[in-house]
Image 1: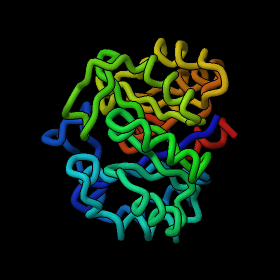
Image 2 (image 1 turned 30 degrees about the vertical axis):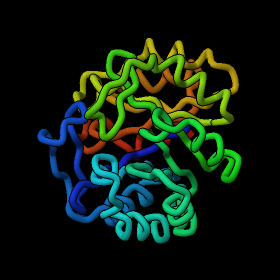
Image 3 (image 1 turned 90 degrees about the horizontal axis):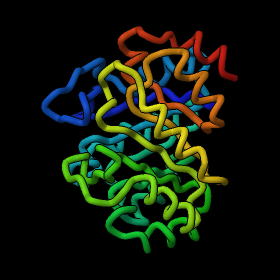
Image 4 (image 1 turned 90 degrees about the vertical axis):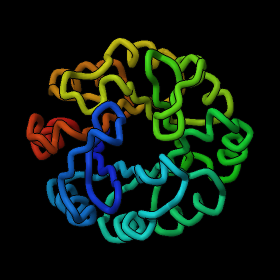
Length: 237
């Protein structure tokens, strides 16, 4: 199982939000590129980067910062947040991103997802954010009536190979993740599931691994010191 540390960027700073609430943010650093370099030095191979400004309003105000990370960190970077057209997909791919995360647009324009998969193949990943198992969009501000499990199956049918699934109620709480939903998602044969949101305890990582979950994103747990990234990376190779 791949261990994927996360960098969320808001106003050029490294932050974590509580349950996706932009008014409840904790700032950890003013230099995202430095944090990425630190992760690489600890042995990370992968990195999850989200432009929170982009997720909220669609403007790629943090593009230059993220581009420098993809070019200079040496990590396999997956990028998301407000990516809603081919131009931005290609911009990040040219900058060195390995995967592009499409979120809100997957719910509002599934045809675009199918076209993106046809053009860019496995480089396209869909981010599914859910509250009470309903898909949330536009920086988690709008909750739809679309069932998130059914939605993941639909994405697979459109050709998507990898889904990042986040339970918003768990994200940033340090109370643990939603293991039950990943158990159900793991039954979608052929779809790689990356778990995100609230992973706090080492035992959760072993449980996710036992479900054959493809990857686990670590955010607040490593920033707060509840999980030691270097130790986790050495145990999950």
